[in-house]
Amino acid sequence: MQRLTERLWSRRSNWHVGDLAWQRFEHVGREPEWQFELWHRDGEVAAWAWEQRGTDLFLQVDPACADLADEVLKRFPGRKVMVLDAEDHLIAALERQGYSAQDGQYQVFMSHDLAGLPEVELPAGFTVRSITEADLAQRVEIHQRVWHPSRVTEESYRNVMAAWPYRTDLDWVVEAPDGRFAAYCLVWLDARNRVGELEPVGTHPDFRRLGLGRAACFGAMRALRDLGAEQAIVYPVHGLPAEKFYLQLGFGPYARTLTYARD
Ligand SMILES: CC(C)(COP(=O)(O)OP(=O)(O)OC[C@H]1O[C@@H](n2cnc3c(N)ncnc32)[C@H](O)[C@@H]1OP(=O)(O)O)[C@@H](O)C(=O)NCCC(=O)NCCS
Image (cartoon, rainbow, N blue to C red; front, top):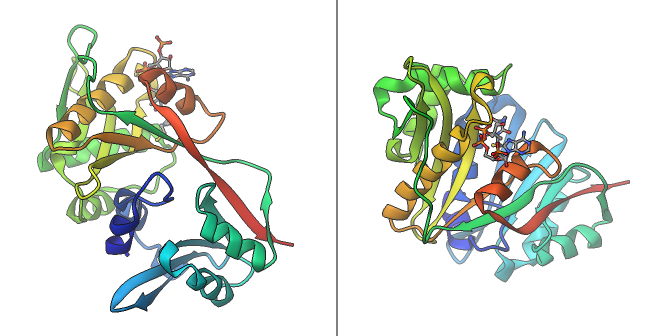
């Protein structure tokens, strides 16, 4: 799956290697809800499907093998399917198979050029840095506090840290003067395409609107740039505060998700 996702990444793709690693490992015990399937062409993976809870279908299909999209949809009929508005080959297959786009929540895909990032500014006493394995407990605690109630645990985060392409030097935190983690930004590097994905990002509720989320993101994005990446991407939900946050950081929208279902 990761090889196809890496091979196909462009601004017209719904998937980045960071998405697959994070969504696969952020929780433990989800396997009974999932079904994975791969399709091959000429000895390479040309399509994958990831069905969740029997209701939702994630899929990626090489546009050069667009006919496979119909096969994937027939293999998992009637599921709710999320695609990017630029994935013409999937949208055409969905329409052929009787699906239509639904109203409702969607994600905005945004990007930020990594040239000329601003200096990171912090309130007095706060510091920004990447983590080490010794920070695991505190790193999990800040995630849980931001996303309460969260299913992320030390066990699951250890799995995240062991998954390709996770790197501790792209997992950034802001530390408060009392040593607590106040904000964080995890970035995933796709080195082949020189693009990093921010997923996830958060600031402890006691420390919001102090510029700490901004500092965590720019710290991580500078590290990403130093590893050779040229752009960062992120996908906030439209209409939620994070969308304004990323716009304020200088991210610009380039695509959106569409959800398809069959009547
Ligand atoms: C989104 C989030 C990370 C912002 O963190 P933060 O540390 O409060 O953000 P900053 O102080 O760095 O904000 C920088 C700018 O972003 C914008 N911004 C931040 N939060 C905002 C909000 N709730 N509403 C509108 N604009 C907001 C503002 O322009 C802000 O500058 P200002 O305070 O001078 O006006 C934080 O609210 C959070 O953790 N939310 C829950 C988790 C989440 O949604 N994560 C992102 C999706 S992965």
